[in-house]
Image (tube, rainbow, N blue to C red; front, side, top):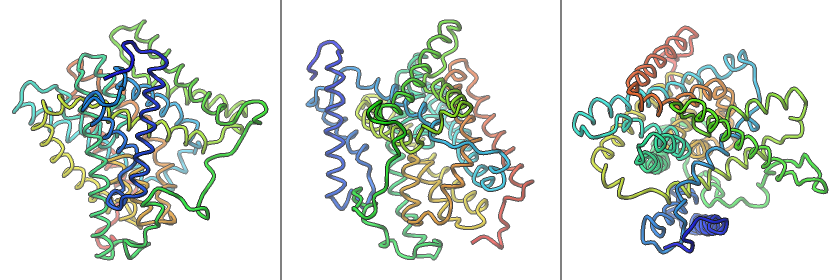
Length: 451
């Protein structure tokens, strides 16, 4: 059921109005239902599941437009265009000194998930089901390590390369990943507290109530940003949102221009938006415009877009695609989750001289669900963020981001041109190089001193 035969601005308004209702229902359920609180299910995921069940891909009760699946592609461009304005620059020497082990840990988590699980899909699952797409295996890291945002980005790229099932598969693995992040993370935390593996809490019940319900009491609220412009001129939120949208728009124009000049090259809009954002940020740094940009505000814009992206992305999943791939997808997810668990906890303990569990549970939430899930799990075992895990991550991600963007950008292109296996082998080769660097830098913790 839809209110409009053709897509119009009012159809756009109805789509966002409906998803807003579902987001508020999701937050209400999170605040009131103890089971949802114990499982830390985010309202955006609840909204997406409700949209899937009640929308055009389910019962058809909600009159979403036929463009429901397109919003995720637009929102991921906004998310990535906001990132450069939200991240402070740091010299490489400082990254190596304070966050080297975290960099090695995070890069290994990404590369090994892509390489091992991708090859599992290419050589094992495809041998059993020959009609599977060569890139079927990378739908696991797309959804788990990447999350719904990466699923939208890679899904859109593959749709442009004539594999329309990719978006639904990526969104499904991302949704399963969030469940694994939350459910598996809580099980691991309870195990750790019982076996004295946590350094900062001793009892799971110490968790603050606001992390369960999602509602922050008066005495614990913090500012979401600073006003850098006068509202008599332009509201600060409007100003920051305009900056992010300009970067996203220029990214779109860049992507289309490259496609026009080089028809065989399909660069995703989000990648171009990220690069444009970096260029704009650099220009703003040189011209001192950056002092009028509030990182917290752009972070909130990115987070808002992510919430909407998850809701729209899950609601747009085509269940017929999931049913079609049910058995190989189940095997892929089960094997991939087991591999991710081994990678996370082996290297988490080997590359952490202190607070090993706090850093590892953060990585588990990040590599199976989203960064928000990683932070939520970290806050459970480290309520005051005393382990400095987030500080190290902020520095460590700077050299990882370009590699991750390149991986997401060129994976569809390489698979479409029959070179996917070389991409996956390259991931394993870079993993070996990362391990060598960590060993040479003496970042590995000897077994006798592991805590």
